[in-house]
Length: 77
Image (cartoon, rainbow, N blue to C red; front, side, top):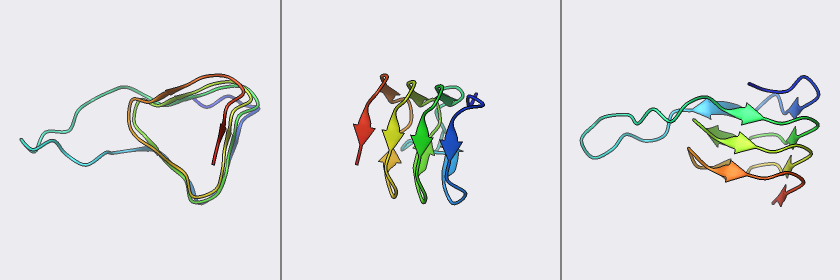
């Protein structure tokens, strides 16, 4: 779920499938959650199951691996 007040750059990919495990299986880690007033720049890759807190800024060209949990008011560059 992406909060209505969040901004996501047009070129960013949200909920991207991560590379498969060595067995070839894809791990299901849930949906992405982006908090209120969060900002995700251009050309970002946000993996499956990532949680981004309220008022967090993810700078352009950032990559967040699947399943990561990021709190409120964090700056990722």
